[in-house]
Each structure stands twice: as structure tokens, then as C-alpha cells.
Image 1 (cartoon, rainbow, N blue to C red):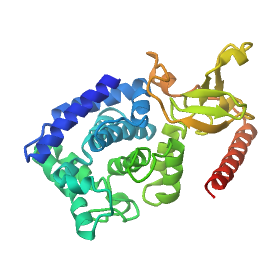
Image 2 (cartoon, rainbow, N blue to C red; image 1 turned 90 degrees about the vertical axis):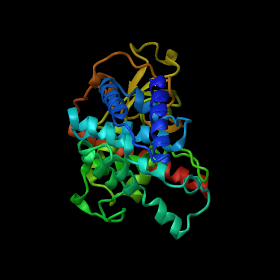
Image 3 (tube, rainbow, N blue to C red; image 1 turned 60 degrees about the vertical axis):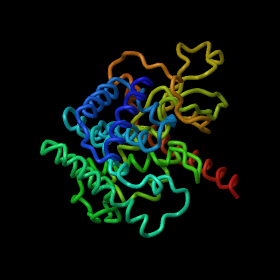
Length: 338
């Protein structure tokens, strides 16, 4: 899907130029891209790997593409389908379109913004709404959603400080994956966070900004360890996350790099939900494009491991072990930074 990603960058680059030159934009090419995203994610997670791998294109444009992809993925987790899912993907593509109408010097400024500069930047939801409304009444819903993409459930967003269910659920989905994408993307003033670090940051710092069910869907859909992530297990073996166990976000299926150690096994994959005494000890690399091959399988088979029928006591054991692993990892991280 790498070629598709570059084509999407070109389409959005043309739209960015149109906004900067105060020309009308065309929504139809974005609707086609939204359809592509939905069809692809219903087949497999290849686009998710692409989005989380840190694409090297223009930051504003890659953010629009990534939010469309990741937002659609969360929508799938919340039960969205059909036209709703296409609308969500389209909303991701335009959620920050108003930023192209803001002076570029403010967007690229490395230092802290003044109060006046911040006020100008925070006008971009209104500017985006105006751009989309010019496309006709058919897209007024999209203009409204774009206007709400930076509102927050706890009333701490902008531009109107809406609260709770005053905000469209789609706008909240777009908002949470926008924050998530910013955290996993490189910035001049900090390194990019790994997906599990970004999830932790969201759950700690933004837990009141978004509804619990949306945060839960985000964690489940990205499984903390997304497909394509290179990891080291507690056994010392290294491998790549190949499938997601949505019921156990910390226990995906890992494809081992060196299956020779498991010659007696019929597979070089370990389903960690079936191996309670083996877990992920360390992330070595974030998702890498091309690390995992995506066969033309059914959507469910491509995205998730087969459900594991387990007893309540086994589930409790898994959760307890994961809690211990997380606590130990936190202690190790704290010692490294002290």
C-alpha cells in the first residue's frame, strides 16, 4: 500500500495548495481515498502499519492520512460499518484542513507560541469549516464535524468548549487518534513515542478528555503492540507481532525471527494468550513496513488471532502476570531515567 500512501499525499498536497490560494477544493478525490481506507482495513492491517511506521512526508499531510486510517480502525472497534465508516475516514482526511489557511510560520515555529499566535492557530477549526461549507450543503455534516475535532469531552477543547454529548462521537474519535498520531510522530522538541508509550500517555493525561469506550477501542484496536512491531520476549527470543488478540491487548501473536529453536513445533508463531508464562519484555522497533506480509485473507483472520476459549481463572492469571510485567517494566524505566 506504499504507492497508495504516496498518491494520498499528492491528493492532499493539491488540496493544501488550493486552501492556501483561497480556491475551492474538491471532496470527491478524498471520498475515493476514504473508500480505499475502509476496504483495506476490512481486509488487513497493512495501512495501520504504514501509518505507525513514521511516514517521512510533510507532517501536516501525513497527519491527515494517518488520522483517517487510525480513526477508521477505532471506528471498526466501535462497530461502525458501511457509510458511517466511510464518513469517519473522510472526516480524518479533512479534520485539520484549516491549518493550511494559517500562516506557515506559525505552524513550523519551533519556540513557544505567544498568546496572540496561539489564538490564530486555534482559529483553524473555524477556517476548516468555512472551506468545507463552500463545497455545498451535501458536506455541511463534514464541516460541522471538522469544527468539533478539537473539542474535548471534559470541556477543555476549542473553539467552543463543548462538553460531553454536545460533541459528535466521530469528532471525538478523530480527536483521540489525532493526539495519538502526534505522540507517535517525530517532533523537533522530542523523540517519537512507541505505540504502547503513546497509549499510556493518553490513558494518564487524556483520560477525561475522551469517553472511556473510545479510549478502550483505541487500546483494543492497536493492541498496544500493533502488527509489525518488533519485540523481545521474556524467553530472550525476538520476533514480530503478527496478529492481535483484542481480548488481551498485551498478548498478541508473535512470529519468531529464529524458528530453529522451535523445530519441534508446527509453527514459528507464539500466541501469548495461550502461553501465560511468556510475555513481551521489550519493544525493539515500532511497526516496520514490509516486516509482515499480509495475505489475501478474510478481514477477521487478517486482523485478529482466533478467539481463545479460556477459563475465568486462566484469564485472571494472564491479567495478574501482565500487571506484574508492567510494574517491573515501569520500575526499570524509572531507574534508567533517574
